[in-house]
Structure formats: structure tokens, C-alpha cells
Length: 168
Image 1 (cartoon, rainbow, N blue to C red):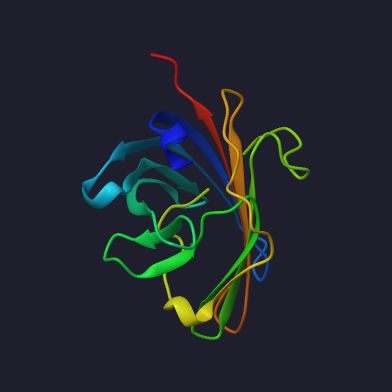
Image 2: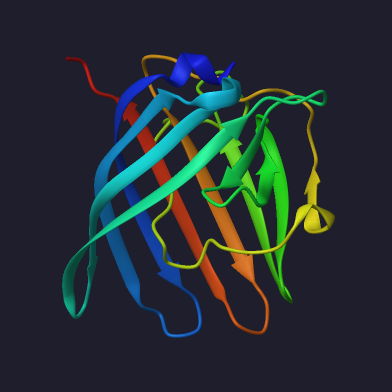
């Protein structure tokens, strides 16, 4: 249940642009807090570092309860993807986002290790989404991660973000 995520998490993010070979890094804080309608607000703020320097960024998503389970929406309410442990797909125009959400108890979690700024995650409606597994992502004190592999005529990169709880 996304309520397990409530609180503050530090995150690190790596972005590998496949067409140019560029590599980017980001780090910051993600805050998960209760919102209206039973939703959970997912707010990220951090610093993105590129070859050209560093710049701050923010991003807001929502985890939304529904009859079919939890989903992730953009700040404006557009559907992004199901909130499940495992693989998800999101179509953004002609580009495809293939995500892998790995909680510490899932088979792909590994180190529970290193998710996303406004560097390309935006997009389509619910008709362009899919899910390969039907489990809610695990979360724990060790952390969790999301990896996006994005391909298409406009985008070609891999982005991995790892979240770790901040103990206050």
C-alpha cells in the first residue's frame, strides 16, 4: 500500500542517453504525503547534473486508489502507469516507456538501489499503458527503485532512480 511510503526519501538517479552517450546524475528528496481523495502526493525536488552544469528541478505525481488498485498520475491528473511491483508500460506519442518497479522483496530488487526529474517523463493517456505483473510494489526500510527504458523516434535513454528512507 502506498501509505507505507509516507514520509521523506532521499533519491539518486542516473540517466544514460543512448544516442549521444551522455550521462546525467540527479539527487534529491522525495516526499510522500496524504492528499485529498485518499491520494498520496509524490513530490520530488533535487539537482540534475549534466556536462553543462547543475540545475534544480521539481516534479509532482500522485498515487491514486481505484477499483483495480493504485495508479500513478501526473500532477494534472493524466494517467501515467499502474502502481505494481514489476513491469509497466507507458506510451508517450510514438515513444515507449518500459518501467521496472523493484521493491526490496521483488525478484529484481538486487541492491534496492538507485527514479525521475522532468527529463522526459510526460505523456499519453490510459490507452497507452500496460502492466506485466499484478502486485503492488513492496517498500521497506532498505529502499526501492524504478528503472525506465525509453525508446522511440524522439527518445532513447535509460533512467534508474533509487529511493532510501530518511530517518528523522
